[in-house]
View 1 (cartoon, one colour):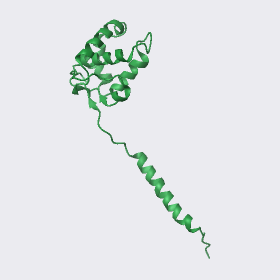
View 2: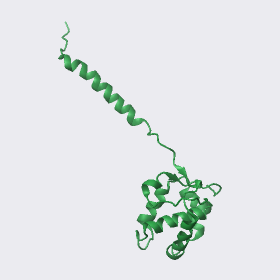
View 3: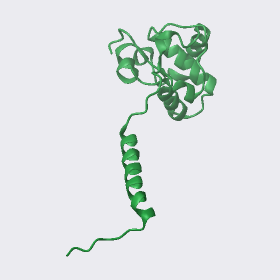
View 4: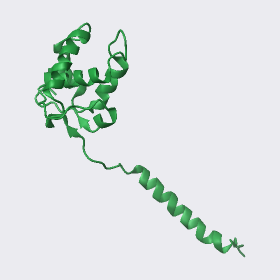
Length: 148
């Protein structure tokens, strides 16, 4: 004769509910979160004026370690094509200039990024690129024909 475990009525419905909730949570954790696709930089995300200021900053503060060749064409595309602008901004914030990391102001950083986009034939637009890493997460560097 088998002995049957007797559960209180409340516990009989609670176990299947807890099991279903655990299954749903597990399935939800495996699903990618859908969101809007990042805007391509080629849609014109910086102004020509920003790029001009960035050229000045690059010329005065960056050329000790970098040259135009290392920041354009296939060399630049290999590292940055398909990457969010926020990543470039963070690298510049934390590592540039090499002799004084973090010394560039947010305005200087974003102007240099605008110049780098211009150097890589990304067209300018009518709106200035924001110096906000959260907003830059919504823009992807898309270099067409740059050896990518």
